[in-house]
Image (cartoon, rainbow, N blue to C red):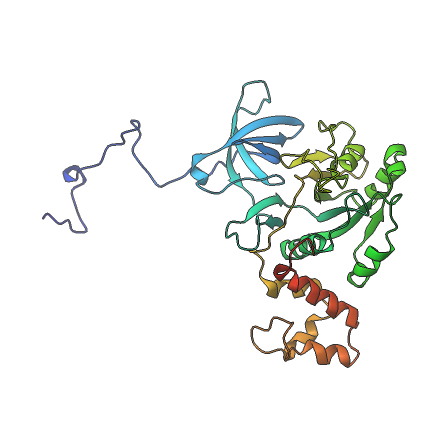
Length: 337
């Protein structure tokens, strides 16, 4: 067996040719310092629609990114044909660091997480007050995902003409979540859109909700030029709606302050297998100081949790501790409970 020392004659070393072409193989990757900046608007079967300056450009992921995938909301770097003309294709060569990420899994036993939206400022959780009935456990799960991913939650309650919002507002009152109550009449005359838009201006907002709650209808009202004008219906037997949104789509708000709305597919479940329960406490800054006396790896719902004493001494509202523990226990409960 022949061995080479530190000073070898390069001409005497065999090189393995590249079967796919004439260029020698190398691990050196181009930096693409002249790449253009873009925003991913939607993803469909490996093709990504991006906004580059004022042009809509179709792109694909460069091979050098490997398994790393770009999602709606990602800030990316592109090279190639960025004219936006028909049948042209650019390449995404870099995905910039994300400021926030909304993730979910199919259920709590699914090890594979699905990244829904990147870089969103807030998560608008849309729920109907009736037809279909509210699902508090699903709302809880969305809240946990928002807190974990770095998004500020916004509760949007629709169909107030069918049922009052009082019970739901009482349930989430201790969380101090901003909320908006809308009605069918408000959607028709534009009043609902004006109320919601006050919370959206200048921000990137992802909308999530189970089918039939009026999420896409609300988005269409906020962004009239939206292509998704066909809304679904609620099944009279199951009480579930038909999915009318099949992929996430980012849409610009037509306002002076700007902003973006991201419409996401309707969900029937929201798994939290990827969530580290220890991070949920960060959404309750008034309770964080009370955890200093907790035992190591405390789940904050155990008999020796220091938060019980902290709250009993009057440092925080007991309703806040109850809300925290309700959110922490949502992974052990079925969403229909």
